[in-house]
Image (cartoon, rainbow, N blue to C red; front, side):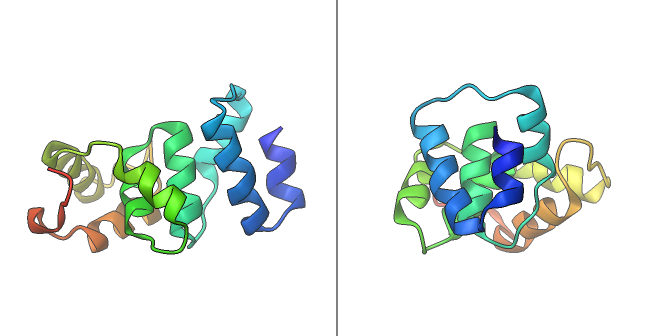
Length: 122
């Protein structure tokens, strides 16, 4: 379902589609989960909604930082992120552990959240 949509649509359409998947709590297949995990984009709104679907804290953190889609930002802000979550991201980045998340995503989180003072959700 999602794999086909990723190939055939613009990212703006994908954001709208994935919002509905998240809001409707639509069950997605393992292949769709893998496809979403592997999908990379510079669009923090899209990264955020993918994070919400996958319950992926690094992606949700980036979704919180984008101002362009207020609905996604609000949904991301509702997810509690602890200082320990940020430490886990930093550890994975510093140890080159990209088994669960790509280097790109972890690097972006490190740039957006350089220290605990930037964590608004504690």
